[in-house]
Image (cartoon, rainbow, N blue to C red; front, side, top):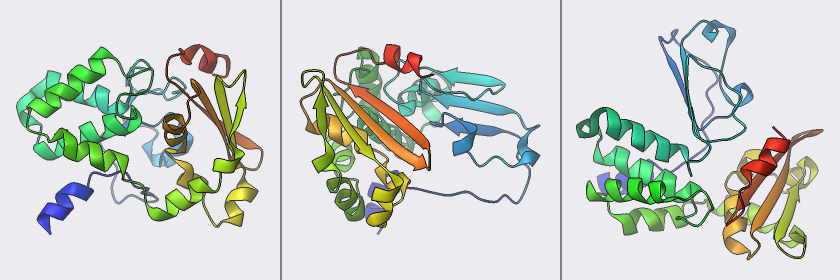
Length: 232
């Protein structure tokens, strides 16, 4: 049981926090770009807030903001920080989780933001005893069967534009409701598509609520931060 638990506990999954039993002394947000995606009751308004993220669109404003849009993932930033502060305090479990996050977000070093720094940080984690092949296989296969079925429903909607250099795919609320899926089920879909197609750029438009569309971009070689800047 322990061996199985060690392999699955650090896999990402949807967790909803809707209450609290005490007022925290500090709130740290990881990999979250805006307040709408946080549990943030009015009682938290005076609590010190630290932001650690890699999304260029991050609009949070904490007392400390560690936002690096050149990083492939928030786990890349977190690993760098933890090693800078106190390397000996990082457990094997934490190193496994951070390598898993790096491999998932960087599509195993395939995206344009997967830099020399990404590889060096990953190599340092591996040197600390993490089995790279084990984590790589988990990163490739962490999706639940229902998620795979949901994603398969949208593969027929892939469209190539700009001379096949860009792939566009969309998902509306009505389409998700028809297959009894939530918008959160599409988390990671753009990484899957980027890995699947030969196009340099992938654009995924997801309707989160009626009239509210979230756009995601991925690229193998193009600096898409310049495109993201135009849409804040």
